[in-house]
Image (cartoon, rainbow, N blue to C red; front, side):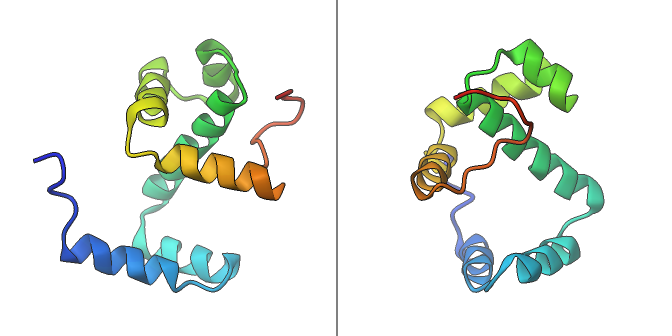
Length: 108
């Protein structure tokens, strides 16, 4: 059951995402695909993951992002024990020098 999300439909979605050429195309596709609330939720999760990676405390992340500590805890769980996707991208973007943290003044 844990892998029931891995099917032809999700693979087709991932293939479509991988075919996007730039940030503008990604923005256009995701705006069509998602409601504004869904897009905001995804953005919030990525911001929280970056702040967790920067070593901020849950309360500080909650203050900066408005995310509940329950949401932050869930994201931390996936960051540390999930499929490895958060860690893969955080490490890859850091190695390429393109990992921006969502707020200024965060020391790593």
